Length: 545
Ligand code: ADP
Image (tube, rainbow, N blue to C red):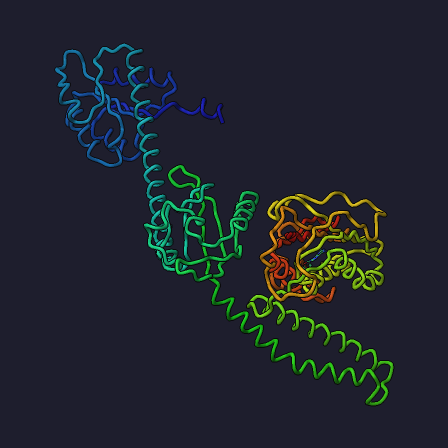
C-alpha cells in the first residue's frame, strides 16, 4: 500500500502556456518531481482538458492569444467541475500583471518568469496542501452535519415516543433516583402534577415500589445491562395500588447517568386473570370431586372387579385427577389468601414441634425418594399460624426432596439470629454431617400470653418484636436453581423447567403460597442456590416477647 502510494504520481497538474520553451521547462521540472503533468498551449484547449479530467492544480499563463489567462480562470471558476481547482498565474516580468485582477478572477497565487524552480515547487506544494486540507475539512464538515442531522432526528423520534407513549415513562438520576423527566402517561397514571414529581424520588412520593425490589432490580441491571418486566406495586396519589411491570435501561442525559424507567400497568390484566382463574377453578372443583368419588368407587371394586389392565388405567386416572384437585385447591387457597379472605390464625406455638411435625409428615416421601432428612429443630416460641407454617415447611421439604437425587441429604434447621429480618444475606453456619435429629437449644423467649389459640393476624399488644429472628433453612444437594429464576419461582405458576409440573407432579403454586404465608407473618422468604450443587431456602420470622 505504502509503496503503491510512493509510486503513484504526487498530483495531476495542468500547465497552460503559449510559450513552448516555458511549457517544456515547467513540464520537465514537475515530472522530475513526480507530478503528472499535462501541458497545453491554448487557453481554450486547457479549459476543455480541465473540464474533461479536472487536474489537482493549474499553472496558467496570463498573456495568451485568443483567450487570456484571466478569461480562462473566470470560466474555470464558473464551472462546478473545475471551480475548486487552485489556479496559479504565471506572467513574464515584462508583462504588467494585474495582481488584483488575478485574485479577483479566482487565482490563488502568481509567479513571475523567469522563475526559480524551488519557489515554484514550494508554491505548488503549499497550494496542493491547502487544497487537500480544505477538501478534508469540507468532508469532515459534511460528516458532522450529517451526524447532527441524524442525532436531531433520533432525539426527535425519542422525544415523540416519550411524549406520546401510552406506557408511563420516567427518567431518574442514578443512583439518587430523582425524577428528571416524566411523560404525560406517567402523570396520568400516578395522578401527580409535574411540579410535584420533578426533583423528587419514588420514596418521597410514596409510590410504593418496595425499595428492596427496586434495589434488586438495579443490581440486576448493573450485572446484565438491562432489566425487563420486573413485577412490582405502584401507589398512585389517591392511594390506589396498581400492579406494574418495570423495565429499566441506563442512559446518559447531558453527561449525567440516568435510568429510563418504562412502566406497564397490568392491574386490569391481573384482575381479569385472577377472576378467570378463580372462576375456572370453582367451576372445575365440583365435577372433579364427583369424578374422584366415582373413581374411588371403581378402584374399591364396589362396581365390579376390573382386569389388571383396567386397574392400571384407573390408577393413572386417579393420579391425574388428584393432581388436578391439588392444583385447583392451591389456586383457590392462594386467591383467598391474596384477597384477605383467609387470615392467619395466630397463636403461640413452638418452632421445635413445627419442625418435627414437618419432618414426620415428609419422612415417607423422603424414604421413597431415598433422600436422608436431617432435622435441627430449636425450642423457640413463636407467634404464628402453626397450620400455615407447617404448610410452608412441608412444601419446601417436598421441593427439596423432589429435586434431589437418591442418596443425597436434605437439612431442615432452625436458628435464632440477632439481626433484623432485613439483614438477610447472611448464610447459616455450615451444616455438619451426622449432626442429625432434634437439637434442643437453651434459647427460649417467654411469651406472656396463654397458649390457647387467639384469632388475630397480629401479635397481642402486650408483646414487642425482639431484635431476634427465627431463621429456618431448608437445604438440599439437588439440581439447583439458575440465578435468573431465583426470584421468579416465588411467582404463581413459575417453574424452572416447563416440564417440572408433569415430571415432578408440582403445580408451580407452592412457593407463591409459601411467600404469602411468610409475608403475612411479617417474615421473609428467599433462596440461594448453586446450579448442580443444591439450594437453600431461607424463612425468617420475627420473634416477639
Ligand atoms: P412446584 O409445585 O412446581 O414445586 P413451587 O412453587 O413449589 O411449585 O416451585 C416452583 C419451581 O421452583 C419448581 O417447579 C422448581 O422448578 C423450582 N424449585 C423449587 N424448589 C426447588 C429446589 N429445592 N431445587 C430446585 N428447584 C426448585
